Length: 148
Image (cartoon, rainbow, N blue to C red; front, top):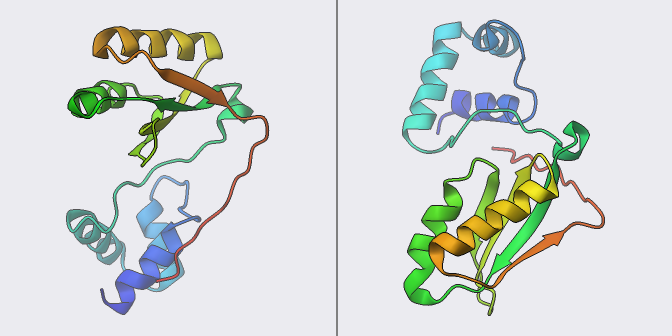
């Protein structure tokens, strides 16, 4: 990565402008042209340096429910189970752990009833019956920026 790539990445991590022409705003902040910023972001996206650019919302402030889920999935069912779980737009993370409960994912939905129904559907479709919902009792938000 060159210095321009790094400057753009540092700028867009937490201060992406919400305006009609965000790349022009970034260009003005960084002393670049709008096309330079767009081309740089496109290049970084194509190289998988940038996975996505999008909003990050506090689900509780939108009156949504959120929970961490843990599932005990036999090795031969992992691929199918993960595929089924990932179909749901409320799944924000899904990962394996070295534990009896080996697949963990977070799920956000309108309410806990919706989450419970989806977990039942996942269980019915995959045959995995040991799925636990672990709603948070206290929320910790850690802001992470990666200086590049």
